[in-house]
Image 1: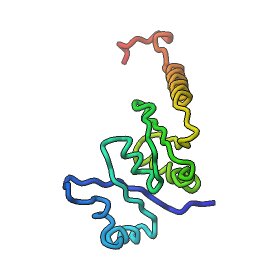
Image 2 (image 1 turned 90 degrees about the horizontal axis):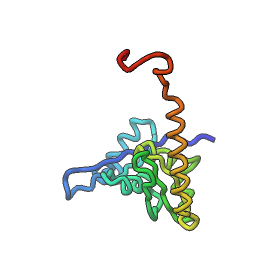
Image 3 (image 1 turned 120 degrees about the vertical axis):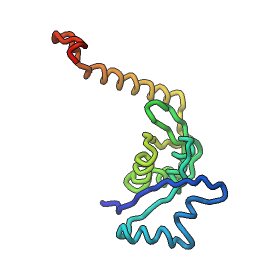
Image 4 (image 1 turned 135 degrees about the vertical axis):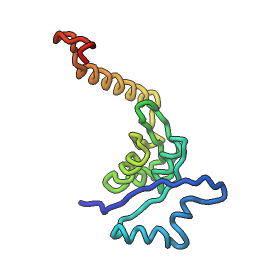
Length: 155
């Protein structure tokens, strides 16, 4: 199965009285339709950009209804998004396309979770365990130049 071409773009404005999404889409989609036609029918989701990562991630997952965004590892840019059970498939999208595009747009690793089955203690333990594993992997791949007779002066 192949999911057709689709993209997400984030827009914002410095003008407080302008709706940036509406301005990009235009009356009855007239402005965005010109772009869609240039891209040979590629679907475009226009979302509102936000400096707040939680809001931005929530906007990027539209049209799904998001209950909460938890930034579980801000340094590693990892978030858990809690959605009602009836919104899981919409948030994930066909073949994972919605969450994949949202992750690329925001730069965050996004895990969609059912709000009713979410165990915050277990989730944080899993994140910490993964962080430790990543640190161990990085330290394993750091060459030890002193073992080979090199010093920092050689660089």
